[in-house]
Every structure is written in C-alpha cells, then in structure tokens.
Amino acid sequence: MVRALVASLPPPPGGLSPRGPRSSRFRQKAASGSSPTSSSAKASLSQGIVRSALTCGAISTIGDILAQAVTRRQPGSDIISEDHVENARATDLKRTARMGIYGTIFYGPFQHIWYGLLDRIWPTKQFNHFLCKLLANQFALGPITLVTSFAWTYTLLNKQDQLAGKLRRDGLPTLQNGWKFWIPAASLNFLLIPLRLRVLFMSLCGVCWTGYLSNQSNAG
Image (cartoon, rainbow, N blue to C red):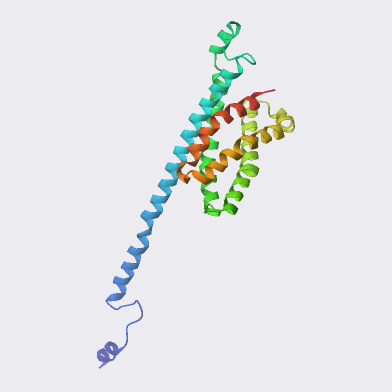
C-alpha cells in the first residue's frame, strides 16, 4: 500500500524522473557548446592583435629608416652630397629600434583594439557614424599616440625631465600637422576599407607619418 501511494505521487521537477538527469546532461552539453565559440573568438582576437603588432612594428621600423635617410640629405637637394655620404650610410639603429618596438608592443595592438571598439559603437557607414569615428580618431587617438610616442622616446633617452617642455613646445604643432595628414587618410579608412584591413591600411599610410613623428620625437 505504501509503495502504491509513493508510486502515485508525481515526480519532482527535474528530480527523480528518468528525463530529469537526461535533460540536465543535455543542458550541460548545450552550455559547454558555447565554450568552443568563445575560445575561437578569443583566439581570433589574439591572432589579430599579434598580426597588427607585427605589421605596425615593421612599418614603424621602415618609416624611421626612411626618415633618417631623408633628413640626412641636403635641404632642397634630391641627392646626397659627397660630404654626407659617410653619415648617410650610418643609420641610428637605436632610434630605429625604439620606434619599431613602440609600434610592436603598443601602437599596433592598441590600434587593433581601438578600431574594433569604434566599429562596435558606430557599426554603419552612415554619415553620423562615420563622423563620430573620424572625430574620435583625431581627437582621442591622435593625442594618445603623440603623448605616448614622445614619452616613450624621452624615457628611453633618460630625458623624462624634459618631456613636459617638449609637449608644450611641439605637441600642438605636431598634432595639427597630423590632422592635415590623417583626416583624409582616416576618411578613406572608415568609408572604404574593411575592418580586418584597417590597421594595415593605416600602418601603410603611417610610413610617412612615422618618419615625421620619429623626427619630432627625437628633435631637441
């Protein structure tokens, strides 16, 4: 009689019924099914950051080498004078290494994360989204790049006490020249270049800018 009474009672939800453990295992599998996707997304992000770091580091190195070659030429001349031939053959490798490492460990990874963030906040190519990304790029990324580049160079040169004066003297003029160069470049970047290629495109544009920024960072 007791057994019949117990058997007549309804099973607790998700409890002792045969379907309870199975449904629980099914839910566990479903939950674990999201893990590979999450891992894949993290792996993709890591690969993108590494790719951007290496790309930007290489282009920063090339930009600085070209900048040194240009600044060793006589003003207004397309050829190197004989008096400067020996100096022209000597590249300041420490300076080049500084710029290359800066591009690799900071600027490349930061750009990758930055452009991904902008694309999530303003995902369309509508004019208002384009304008917001352009303004954020110039008035947020621009100053960050300028200050970190100057600070990186002056710290490695053991001139930290001169950094504030350097920023007061050269910060705004350098930033204004950057706007003249980067606003057209960033406009093309946001309007025409797919997200996965934006760091590469901006890095290629940055060969010229890196040379200029390197000269400004190492000047006086």
